[in-house]
Amino acid sequence: MTASQPSAWSTRVEHVDLAPLLLFAFRYALGRRSTAPSTVADLLARYGSVLSTPQRQSIVRDIDQAMAAGWAGDDCDREVWRKVAKKMGGSP
Image 1 (cartoon, helix red, strand yellow):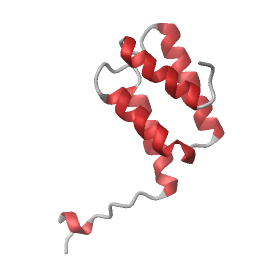
Image 2 (cartoon, helix red, strand yellow; image 1 turned 90 degrees about the horizontal axis):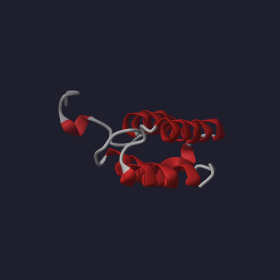
Image 3 (cartoon, helix red, strand yellow; image 1 turned 180 degrees about the vertical axis):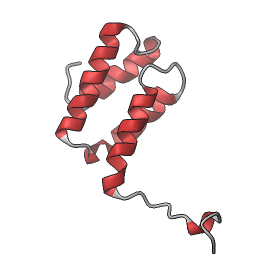
Image 4 (cartoon, one colour; image 1 turned 180 degrees about the horizontal axis):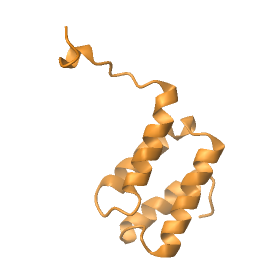
């Protein structure tokens, strides 16, 4: 079996690898006007428990800054980010 064959790849993501992936996905999705915000919000809801307190605070801070600057996406995206911030411990 070679590494290029799908069956050779592990589908398991280690706990230690998941937090950076969530943060990268979040930073990609923030400000987008697509399905990315809701997809990433769902991932954060499902796997956000792997994030440390400073990582959660960073997400809330980034959302607050994007909202204040007016680049958090459309109305539907901003609503998604408000819910994420609240779930991560920020103000509603």
